[in-house]
Image (cartoon, rainbow, N blue to C red; front, side, top):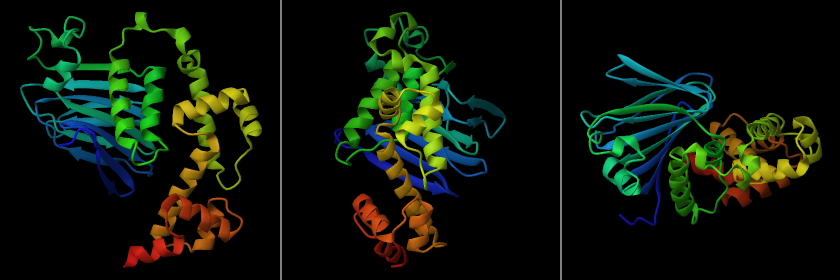
Length: 302
């Protein structure tokens, strides 16, 4: 396998979305995104050679093992690390409504190479522990939350996505094992400020809820009580794009889903996502997807 390329597998399960991205051979990022009103169940085989990291970015979920006889819940802003060299641990995760879970899977041999000079620091890499099963739950730090949100919400040209995902995967593992006493808070105090991160998340919720008539940056800044420069800077850091670039991409994705559902015509979809004229909507859709809404709908039935 060419390690410079990333393969992505996508699967929709009753509007719950599962995306699997190959970072390198045997190294995967899984994204479980449930924007429905029902719990969604996702399954994926994982053998005993793998170490698993699970992160709940939003909402909650529950991992099931031994045919449901053992469960591990996972809440927003929490993580699970799982490793059992004695038996396979297939993923069976129930993701709650409006919840996001990201998982990282990599072979234990690959993982060892990342810390070959740090075996005494990573406790389960020591000789006496290397063949024992391991479990750890922990809180997601603000800096990890930034990376996780960037993996969920990114605005990238397809040609740079493989490099971006690879970099973020390694960054996430680095932050996970970073010792708190070594964290340089002064390096980027904004990202360590959980209150500011919460305000940025609120800003995203506001613009999505009012996407047909979104507030201006000034109005949004006032509403979340965050200076406009910190709103602009922070939103881009958390979600990988400026506020209105993110909103435009979100609106186009909603439009694509509405058109695919077939319950609204092009004009109705344009109005629902905030375009007062069909021509503006058609131009925006074509810029994003390379085809007009009408041709997109026709392509679904061909």
